[in-house]
Length: 413
Image 1 (tube, rainbow, N blue to C red):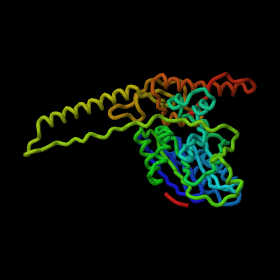
Image 2 (spheres, helix red, strand yellow; image 1 turned 60 degrees about the horizontal axis):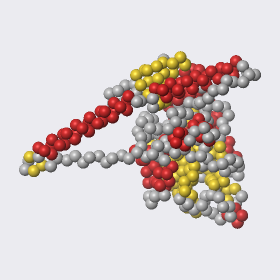
Image 3 (cartoon, helix red, strand yellow; image 1 turned 30 degrees about the vertical axis):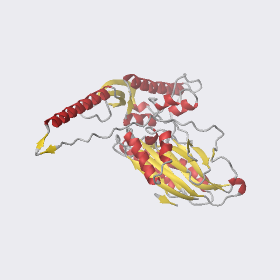
Image 4 (cartoon, rainbow, N blue to C red; image 1 turned 120 degrees about the vertical axis):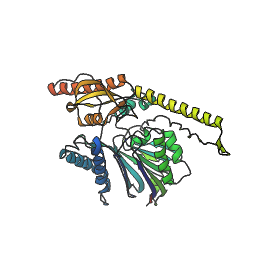
């Protein structure tokens, strides 16, 4: 199989550190989105892709690829156990391996978490992986709609990740490509801001593959850039000769699991960013026209006033859940503050951080944005319910737990 690939990653407009890690060598491609404090997420995601890069080129490469996720999980947990600063770190991981099965070249895609794999075939974009998130589970069960999922306050809460439990459960899919098809691997920093339709439009464009990757990053940043953004694009240029019966297979995507196609979750529509006003003074005979100057000053004052009002309104409706002296608390404002506004404590709950599991505690330390005070209070109630359920099970090992909802925080080859 002859391939062309392009990579791009960006810190985004909000985060200070890029905790994503990406890898591509023409045979293996991977995207990991780390979590766990200032350094933990970066270390976890890097360990994940480094482990995958060590897969040997042997006849048992498929078995090695399947077990590589378990090995990455073991290494991350081991590293975290030897460092207090790295305790609780974890990462998502989505990877694609080029292999051959029954005489047919294909991509073997494996994932844990909410970093995604998409496949563009004959102008149609299809999501291959399933999001291992609380909201993803609700969506697949039919409890909520795609529209509700796109704006759910807990859409960032993972149900699976590397580095959280001793045993990791990954999903594996087989993707049978054709020439001109494009495989996309990305972190959730892309799909949280750019719709599937917009992604499809960009991938179908006439730009180079690298320009398309860069454009995806640009669109996510224009629409907010609230998280790290990473993308890998792999374009199929040519396929080697295959057996007749394999070549006759009609479907470009063959799922290993006996389930229906994954249900895509579309993010908010791409925001329209206006061009800046061209502000120039016209000078004639060393004199600036007074009317033009006054109009400019008035426009400038109106613009500044609009910005101040927008910041005030935005700040008034911003909340996040974080840590206050070891307890889970609600803050008014944005994490890190916004201009002259600093976040203030609204409520300090009775829930202590040390009773939460590593994923939940990591999310709280990284701060969980919420659109309202009510949403923040609901988030904490869910955490308390999960802790109560765990305590009940611990105290009644042979009984049934109370019914509650549990949530967890360019190259050519």
